[in-house]
Length: 293
Image (cartoon, rainbow, N blue to C red; front, top):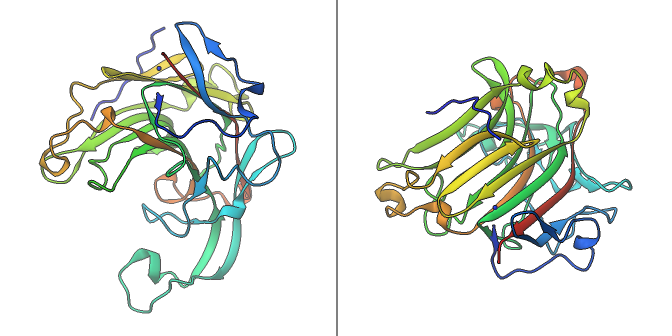
């Protein structure tokens, strides 16, 4: 496992097109270096996220997390941001089975709800540049993320590949921003290339860091994935190393299309939830994808 705090000073959209009409209004059509806008979501239409671009994960999904995911916790606000809210919400767990060992079914009640919006089946990407401007909740127990997964129809996680443009949670007891990639080994397990940067690295420069919006960026080509926060390089991943083991057919998952996820998990790796901080809000201003012709 690689950990780094090195500070140094581009995605092909697959056959799915732009969101209707409104994407390019605020996003620059091109960027220095030959990048051209191929898709953006500016979240400028209040209500539900655009169904042409986004769908949802639902229920108890992974990692023994506390929250129950549901679509109604993701709303585009009047001020033009996607707001994902984690809130206390108690009701019976419809999956409950007495005596089961399945963590999704052994909980009698749902105690917290949140949302995970994803582009699976709507938008997939290969190579280029992602720009995501967001404000994350930094209270104890929150686990916001910006990440990508490959299709699991050929083989499951981790051989499908995972890129974490951003995760926030305590690592070895220290609240941290993480920038990672994961793929599969020969035994069906996971191999990680991860950067773990203590949250104090950012708050030491700006005590109000958690109250502000920040821009996460990924530059991705056939050779490297580079992950940035406010133009600071957090991790550089050499794709010559990211080859699956036999469970992933010895293929490189980062040379295949992937879909995007924006979610606010609670508990589990996020730690014990600060009850006084509920409800928690994760706000995403835009998602922009640029490619070179």
